[in-house]
Image 1 (cartoon, rainbow, N blue to C red):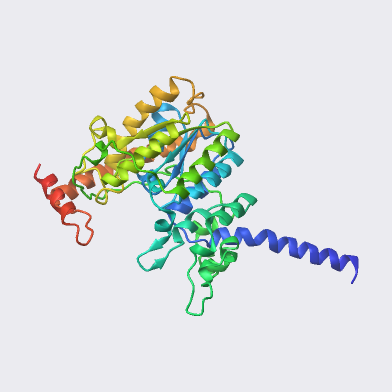
Image 2: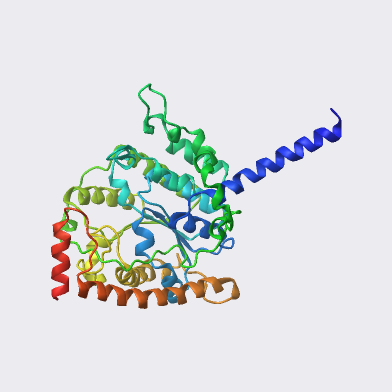
Length: 394
């Protein structure tokens, strides 16, 4: 074989190796989580002031375009559904590749649950939520490390012969093209092809608006003061996360966004609060401030007490801005640069304009839903239905 032929083979192999991850990016199943990560990667280097890491309530609850317009602070969520705490450290590392935020904000709802319960579903194992993290990261050494930490033999499901089912094999996480190869026809869709480099701006900067209404009963479990230990594996992940933050000399705020909390859950939240505050970090449990926020359980949830709708998000964000101003901006820890000036942030200005349009339209829709009794319903959830009727009556 001649040198020329060897060079051609090497070039061909290199081209294929370069193409594989980019084709994979395109055929990964689209959705809010993919749009959010692709949007994050599209942000210009070192232009994000704060990054929020956590589960699905985050993008519904924190209106990042409003924070930009009213505070000059760029904040972006790297959130996924039922995000397992083990992912947090790797998302910090992923952030620091392109951004140098003053503050990391961690939403802690999932940290009170055993890791096994975040993987197991009613019909068996479910690694789909794990994939929302790993399959939305660019190919890199950090992604390999994240998969190694999140995909274990004990997480897998096995057939009757004791063989691991293909969807749970680590190789199908490392090379997720095996998972999504049947989506190749979606390459003709612009929404997919535009993710060839896994960078495309997200119109609302990670925020997800909702015009649904799913009332929840007002409860007082958040006033519980007792403490119960968090699951040991999550405490280990939290210690590891704090070590990571200290290594990079990064400040962090740990938060709980509004949701209907049980007494047992609140006890574990109290333990997490004590754990992080003893190590020098702020902890904000928004459930303790619902009256100050002006939050109405009958109108501001979208699905019975798990996620807020856009009206709830507007209230929470307005109050959160005051908290950030008092605890971080005025102390010089955040908002060192007013990002409202300069052409580099035109996309953020457009996101705020779009946010205002969404808010106006969805507020009208929410009022209409309440007037018509058009509520989100979960089968067997009579309490939420009764709360909806009460909201409609006044």
